[in-house]
Each structure stands twice: as structure tokens, then as C-alpha cells.
Image 1: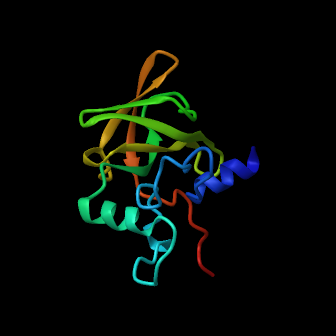
Image 2 (image 1 turned 30 degrees about the horizontal axis):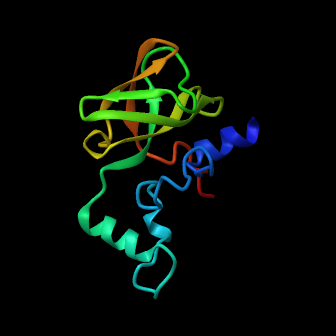
Image 3 (image 1 turned 120 degrees about the horizontal axis):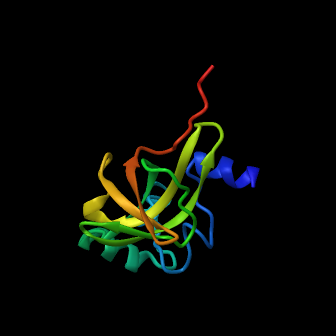
Length: 138
């Protein structure tokens, strides 16, 4: 549990939660590790096509505005369409509930509000910058 909280605060994607074979590196906001100009690799053509066409969804960080903790698999509701919470917990370091969600691109701007269905109750959340926590430099 502690390791999961720490990796979420640093926005380190977990395979099986935040990334899997249905989420591309570009959608997971991991484009910085994809070097399309460095030669051929498996999936290069698909990523190049997606980059040219533009994303339809993106992994973003959020914090809960209302009381409640969003968990993996909870539905996210935005005016731009549905999304899904990929990770969520209460951050002891930050003292508030945080999470990651795959949202429609039109709902990914910092400060954008949306709702998370927490056991049948819509709870307000908002998109925030990531990583949630960054170690201070010496």
C-alpha cells in the first residue's frame, strides 16, 4: 500500500492500472519516452499515426473536491464524455485524496472539473498538475 501511494504521488504509471495493452504511451502522457525519430520499433507506425491524428483521451492527475476516495475502475463523468479512474488513494503526504484518470481530451485541462461515481454517488473532482509531489531540490 505504501509503495502504491508513493508511486501515485510521483505519477509513476502502474501496468494493469494506468497503462495496459489498450492505452498507448501517448495517451498515458509518456510521450517523452517515445522516440519516433530513432528508428523502427514495434508499434511505431501506430504511435506515429495517433500522434498525427491527435489523441482522443489522456491520463491526467486529479484531486477530489468532494469527500470520498476514487478507486481503480470507478467511472468518471465529464461534459466531454465518459472516462475511467485508473488509480486513486488518500495521499498522506499531501493530506488529500488524489488519483489518475483516463479522460476525454477536451476534459484534461488543469482546473477542469468532473465527477467520479463513488458507489452510486457523484463526487466532484478536478484536474491538477502532476506529479502530485516532487521532492524539493537541495
